[in-house]
Image (cartoon, rainbow over all chains, first blue to last red; front, side, top):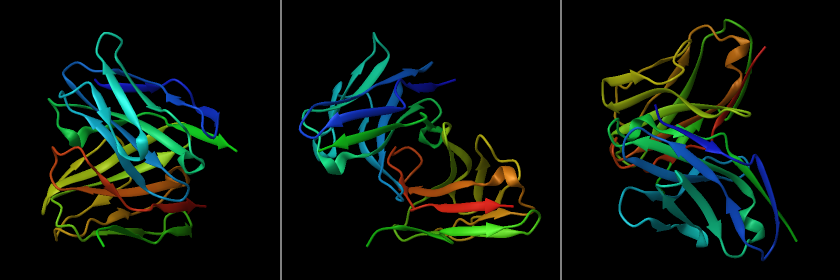
Length: 115
Length: 113
């Protein structure tokens, strides 16, 4: 069965510094991977997705993630954090064999951005 | 505006009192799903529906029911709520089951005393 592990429950950065949110996955088949963001008191919003095309995926708001099969990782990065990036981020995996209705969510990483 | 609307957003109820959380989407999406979010556990799928009259269990379906009589609506029913169903619930929809992009409602926070 597929699973994801988000390695940090909280990440704190200063505004203007790089962001790195780490995600490792486990999947029996070719995985599709996603990052979603949840701002306070809001639903989740798709940031970006990987579905076996280019391994470097660009998303909204300057975020990107790189699929590394050898490391089973899909880390989320941004060169320069903004105050509005403070939110909770979820890494999500789905096996193409089972379809996207069986998305498996990580436990989330809360990003704190200080001035 | 394209959106997924859930009601109520907040509810406090007592054990055993039946309740329904409604979910409606205006994007003509075929796929809809319910999740619950609990601290340290991420989101877990309760039920999903691939189209009208087609529903299936997710990972944590016990204590919940759903129905999909119309394409736009996917209510979540708690026939006899218990305190362990206290949680934040999200409804989501997608154009198809294989697109990968879910559109989420803003959540319904339920407390069962």
